Length: 256
Image (tube, rainbow, N blue to C red; front, side, top):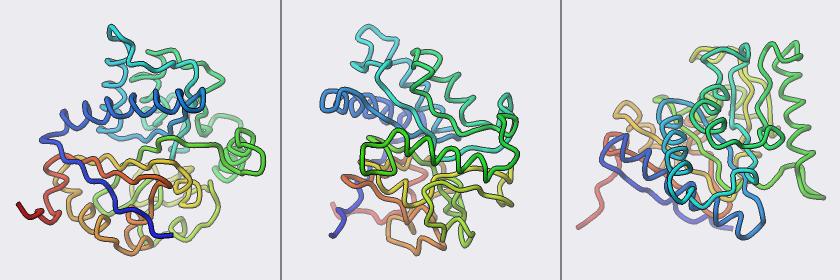
């Protein structure tokens, strides 16, 4: 089956991008709850990822509450650094501070990847446990739960989640795996793989910054996913590139 072409949205700057993504995310979560009774989101880290969550929190604490029942939202992560729970390198820590603790997502619906001091001696054990958690939340006959929106970032060299170019992770067919010796610190991580990411209903790649523009252009054009992993992710229903003007700077200019 031929996948639809990715949707590309360009905002003037990173602040505008965060506001736009936040508004569209709460709308998508509300729509999922209307259809299924609950919603699920897979979070990413990084500066723009955290800025999006801060904007979601601002909407959620506004006069209309953004239309999302936060007690019926399941929260997962696309990757995590295998460091102590109180480390500022943890994506979970940033997400809790920016959004989850603000809106009161119930503890049972927050599914963080384990930290290095969370009872698992190795990232391999942590990855196996997380795969089990995904399976336990899945519908009968499936190994993975429904992901309504899966958020990702991209590195300047083209990595996404913790799948780095030409690394073992780029070839790994497991839904969750450990990653060691990452070229970007911290070097030890747990990550979803392509087989899990690409089951999401919608995959949104949220990218800001001119240093990422060459990788964005190559990925949108369909580069080899082993050499540029961001090119290998897609949603079942939609794949969206949500960019600031600098991040979109190497994309072809559409005809007038």
